[in-house]
Length: 453
Image 1 (cartoon, rainbow, N blue to C red):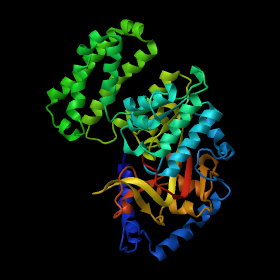
Image 2 (image 1 turned 60 degrees about the horizontal axis):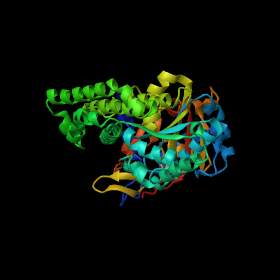
Image 3 (image 1 turned 90 degrees about the horizontal axis):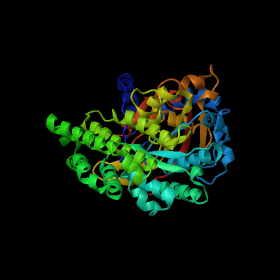
Image 4 (image 1 turned 180 degrees about the horizontal axis):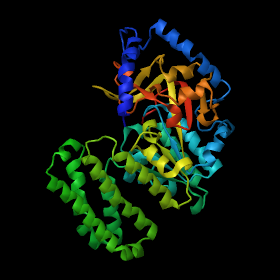
């Protein structure tokens, strides 16, 4: 979940970091103090004036992030949304209330105005099915279902509010008009094994003993210790892969019986659990953090659309890093390459504020805070535009304008994933050409931490 740099960006940052770090004053409490040298900041502010001026007529003000605010404020996005059947909804932290609320607000707009059928989350595929059962059939509670997503990042009141709205939306809808909730991540296999086992127990119990032992060993062996799995003998890991393949073959060979006892739709759903298990094993065994994980997240996003019907429109909820374009082998870039303009991305930015994050030696806490934007960053520049919250559509910037040049070139941008060390905030500044990464950028001057439950 933590952004990773390309080689070119790493070299770029190598020269920039000393300046970013040097502009910070000494603070007695680095957890609450991020104040920057006045002379450097005044120079940066002066340099930003032409860009800020060029943006003044191009921004769309927002009255806030709450999902029930007037939808008219989002009408400027219609041209973006109308040409897409995938919309990526990013976030500049994994723990900001305004980001989560605003994505809820956008998804409601996508459903009600543009006919979107589902939202996919950067969450375990199998775990998200519990949320979908609540959203579609009212099984369980929103809180219990969201807990099954397995990531602390989504166990918040804001995500529960989204899920409850989806459930309520579906109450008076026909089957064909309902909306759905799915996951596209592959960092666990436990719920997938349980799904397969439950399905077989209900529809062909004679197959359970033939299938489940061949798939449950992988999940039991990996647990949370991916490093130990990678160190296993190649023959043992090949045995797990063979087991998944053999189990899936047995499952598929009995399709007629299983479909007869259930339905084609349920069979197809459970069949994808075997795909997730194969992906999971490969991701666990890979020394690279985001490959092949992101490639599979893109494929699973496509699976959601295909499973619902080839014309379905799907919103995708994840970190800026995953949904953004232009970084090879990441989810957003894969979808951009495969779908072109039918994939549009909304990125997020903030200048200062609180957020949930994992702090070294502390764990997950909502008490992380940036009190002042690093004056060398795009985040600080956007704070100067004059709106507490707003959005920019990059295609609407004049081609020859300095603003267009600025956002299409790599600029320092503050963004973090699940981890945050308040002693080294400069580590979360990355060179990013934001107009390349995103089609739309939503910015908040001040934010609050998401509310855990």
